Amino acid sequence: MLSPEERVLRTFLVDGRLTTMAMKRDKRLVVLRYIARVFEPGVRYAEKDVNVALRAFHDDYAALRRYLVDEDLLSREGNVYWRSGGPVEI
Image 1 (cartoon, rainbow, N blue to C red):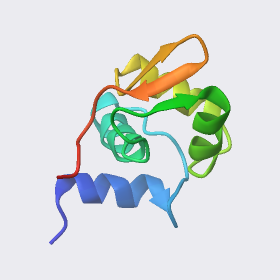
Image 2 (image 1 turned 45 degrees about the horizontal axis):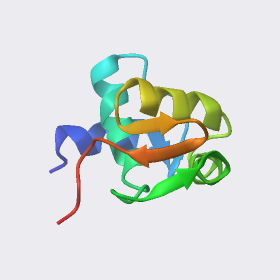
Image 3 (image 1 turned 120 degrees about the vertical axis):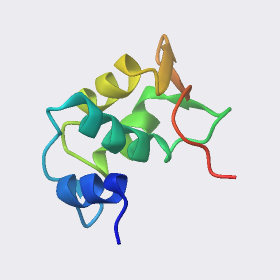
Image 4 (image 1 turned 135 degrees about the vertical axis):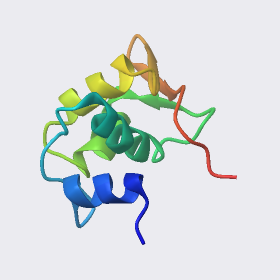
């Protein structure tokens, strides 16, 4: 039995890539929290490294980056990003 989050991820991700971005915020947050997990908490990333990581999920990495920042999953100062929200694996 799939959890509600797993169902959302199966809807929007195929072979680890986003097919489309969820328009409803609650579903979009499930997807964004999943994507945010590629960034290690406490690590600072150059914008180009963030872009490379996000391009693995979708070609419009700039939109993904903006969504992550807007939802406080990534924080930004200049061209440096770090994870500031989302679930953390223990």
